[in-house]
Amino acid sequence: MQIELQQIWSNEKITMVLVTHDVDEAVFLGDRVIVLAPRPGRISRIFEVGAKRPRSRADDGLVHIRNEVLLALEGQGEVPQPVSRPDRLLKAKSAA
Image (cartoon, rainbow, N blue to C red; front, side, top):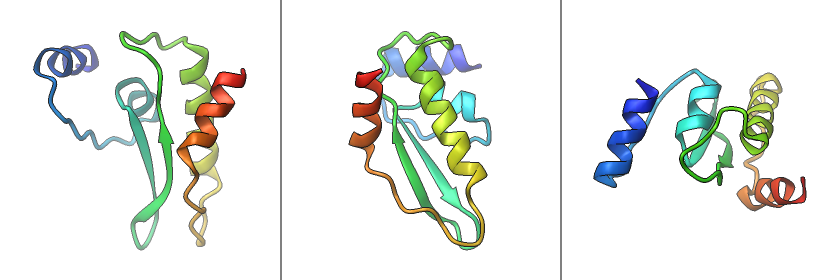
């Protein structure tokens, strides 16, 4: 299904919105991963995924972003985390 979605996006050049609970899927398919805070549902963090396509799941940049997203999800409690600046992640990725 994920490969099919990539092919549709590649052929049609359309904007797609994917809602998922699967962090790996979100990072693999998305250009941006938006983490929502619970009750009330508000944007907690935004992660930019700058990896080139076609993507490999083993790409170090994707693994790094995946881990950052998981840490953001684990850190959510009653108080939402501040929205991160996407350029911080891009700088961290280019420094690695």
